[in-house]
Length: 444
Image 1 (cartoon, rainbow, N blue to C red):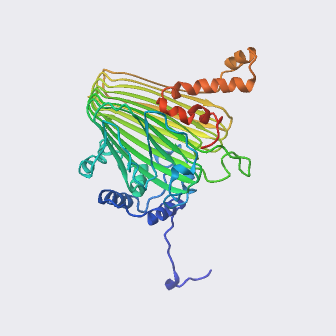
Image 2: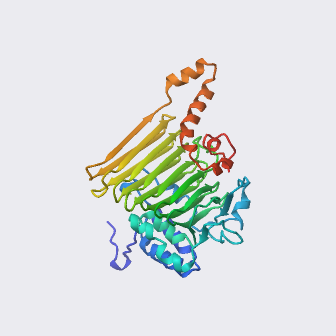
Image 3: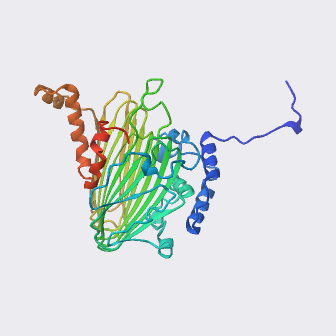
């Protein structure tokens, strides 16, 4: 036995790789130039001090491996001066206003906004920013805190009437590396209408963190399409798809607060990311609103796609129509957790939730967990979940008509996807969402 003198005894605090990654990132993020965003950065960094990456010990992440985040360089995004020029981008359609988001420059610089759409000034912004997060109770969630710690600016827009121009928000990080925070706020006044297309693309080892708050006044209508297009699949040295290098990560947290008579439509389609986490959260503040959710995600290789949705009915006569679809191939993992909350005051709620998933590989995994929490006694609520493979009788029928086996499978998969993709805004067609999801087009 070797005696250790007391004076030589050293005690060191142990940290996890996730703690090191987060600490390194927070240490090198510059302070925002505006006092409003700087204060929010400071609060978020204090809340994250000593924290680590989400782990499976946390209920909200127990199906989701966040290890892909630790492979992203722990520094703010480094990229060419103009991210949009780093990739060949298709031209926007007519009657589409494209705003490029890079987290550093003003996306509205030199842009003439269409009638009915205006920037919120600093005085109006301060009481509104974060209000929807507070109403939803998600201001302290890990993805929101991460975004608050790294985002240095906010794009805040007010919609005062029906806007005929489609608003397209584009973030293409190309081969850039590091972490990018984007903060967005939309305020739709009573009776206002807006069609929004949000497009995120990446090829390098980057993490794009997005927090979007949307407030819908009485009778307002928002149709929001979200495309997340990761890189083409690459085979690594071990033969596993997606293992050759660090893959991009997309974290997207959306909170929408609806007043009576408002209509909200959210359609998302994502594929190709090492990790993608979508968190659509809806609060029908006084009921009598309509929410329509459509989601489609595809995973391959070792990718993880996770959708955590939550719809709270805080008043009577609310309606929900939700369909979530997933395709899992290779050793990919798809997760869906959809919560519908109907408290006692939400009488006469009509909510429908359906999860449909296809397993395309013996190594793929799908976890689906639709939830209904109902206290009201006068409701009409239903949910269902199916996980299956392609139907052999359908494949046989197509092959009996002279269609090759591989083509027959692709036809069935295209039909499975088109039910969701058909609801995207027409402006999404230039991004070829179906071909991209099926791996039939070049990577962005």
